[in-house]
Length: 457
Image 1: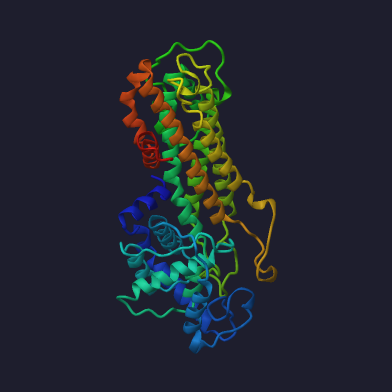
Image 2: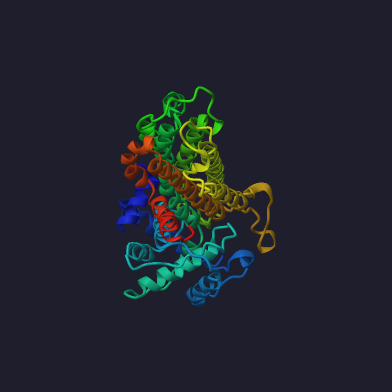
């Protein structure tokens, strides 16, 4: 099991990772080292005995530092109109514990121990804003998370922040890592849904997708592809295959799915790597007498992997829309144009249009590429905007659209199976198709309302 999926599993169970306990000695040694630096009158330690950002040349009164740190936390917590779900915020906490365990943050062992109790507390539900990232450590959403964590653990424990705790709490890539982790199961569900629908589509249209197996031998797309390979072949052909070529949206399924699976694999590998590395600033190295100023809180590679997933999901959306257009075009034997079963009905004429509308909406949201332009804050101190969290939000929105597109496609297939006698034998496979993606299954209820109660989806 990958480290990413291990973290997702542990978060679902609210179970601490064994890695956290094994990091305790290193956490203590680095904290002691950081404290010795802070107590040295000649050493400026960013965020521990100085202010933050472009005020880092302002030294703090040692006797008032912990009060100042509390104030700085609250002064960072200025965001919020859209928040992560409970499960997404839980992954953020587990990602924070993991990056702390990799060392370098200087976090106090006492806070580290209590944070473990906090993130595994089933009642801990931090309000982490999604719309307040400027991608230099995500310090605004991190401050919200940190304050909610402190409020939770202070219900049972006395906590005063140690000097390195401020930057240990709010600096690091854990916000974007945690949110991105929540996208892996969504990609996998979409992938499975597309495969199952493709089996039904192949049966109904007379197109056999089994050539995918040959592609698999040439391209290593990882566990996602391998686990789905047995599910490629159509359930059973119900019409005689058309001798003319099917559209590219049918023939390109091997290439599109291969790309989708590969992008998922690369995103997972990037998250595995980030979960194995420190993510903080400053970095406390036991072999050095000064805190190291660096940028491990930035994750440009994660942004690039997310961007690839966005592109592949857009491609999959195009493929689904166009193959449904062909299915309802009147060119597939035994399927009437627009699935009109009576002269008094327009059939399913609106369904491909709604699919296209969802795809166009996703294209609008995903239109800007991260490194096509730049920006800076703090008068040029922070000038590399990697936008990992914003890119993850784009992918999340893209997966929403792809889920809707898949749900509409499945609805079209269900209509064909229910209304055309020669397709009825495929009805036995619908329960399997409906359980691939819980979100697709839920969306079907909208269409049920439309069919039976006149309620628009």
